[in-house]
Length: 380
Picture 1 (tube, rainbow, N blue to C red):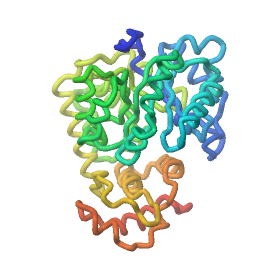
Picture 2: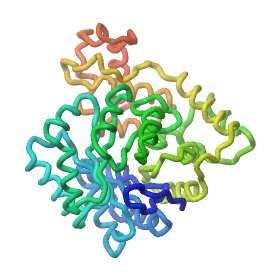
Picture 3: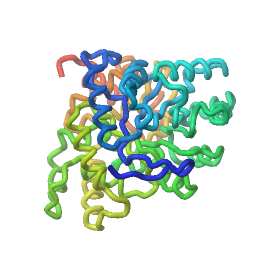
Picture 4: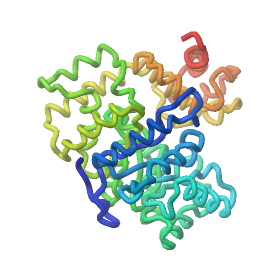
């Protein structure tokens, strides 16, 4: 396994991190985790060099932290950096902050957390983060030795806000979504470069877009991966593209089979920063460009369409609608849709208010009808 130093304390951090948002399940219920398989996978990863394990308060409806804690018993906790997150949307008072944190310690079975993040900061909760002084709260936890490093995860746009947050506090690290398709999505490469310029290490989430970059790829994209005669897997192209960036500390993968764990360990035991050739980078960019051509609704995530009177998260639904075409009707999208979409597109009454605000002039009402037919129909 390759390692990169954590600047704040110098601890060597594995280039592959184990994300626990998509652990194997016994049934369709999100909190029904297959504990035996999950513990086997996490411990196998640690035994083979992975020392970064990431969880969150609401992953698997609260069950992820418990299973992670069980996996880290029997001496495994001492071998890893644990990352966990404080959810702003679940907090109303400072007492709530401490209640959530103490609950996390209890579920994990630990007396401190290595890396603690303010979870999912974006345009619509940054004001709350500041008004509740959540940054001050996590800094206090660090001063008291209850956490070692503090950071934030980000799902907003890069322009303006990301740089403001980076400059707001002496963050030890930041977590962003990044892969070779999402170079201009959310923080993207621009956000990575800004954090790197400030000396802040970047933890990457969704390096394979929930596995979609490795599964059921459109035929028009397949042709690119045989370039230069490489025998690299789809995951290898994606993970090596990220490992090529020197400012990335660790790449979180939400693995749900032991085979995935083994493959990712193999790949990131070999990958180096600044090692891809110009020809290899060109192949990846050509494949990414083909992916982008398949996007049905060119939503930029500006959220001008929000709030929806029916409380439908229009940009998020559009993202799923695009991915349905982009990833060849991958059935895992239906699973993720059930997890992440609270108010379904069938709630849309076609008032048209959103279309009047959309700077891209998208046919949002049509997209909502299509999405309801795809993701809410049991027959497809």
